[in-house]
Length: 171
Image (cartoon, rainbow, N blue to C red):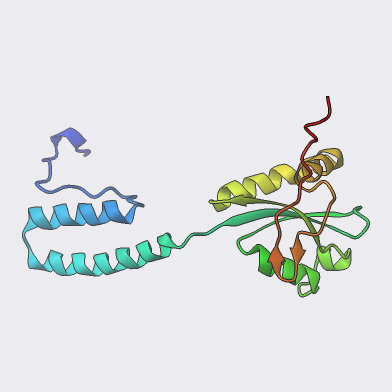
């Protein structure tokens, strides 16, 4: 026997949605629940959740940046496209051959291009997009960003590429 959803009595307290991702909204729902239930047991449960939400909020406040980057070898014949949340550490690993793999095997350690993202899913999508580019498109992308193909990782720091400004005297 199935019971229609409309025949069930409406609860006298707010229903917390299954996927409340925002900790502040979750706290608001808990406050409303406690207000409507008037039970001290729920207050104790709320305090536990509040501490968890606060710890999650502190974690969420940390600003995470994600980088999509292109490394090349000394002859600019081999490209490596990657994504990371710490580009300085990752470039150090590539330069010093700390991790076995493609970059160590083909001596790819010159940072010539990078983009910065706020969200990892956007960075991964962009990485896959660049990996799908033809060699000509990758070269054009690097030329627009770093026309001299200078190494942008020097002495443990990431440099901004130097672009030459077009001459305003040319007509």
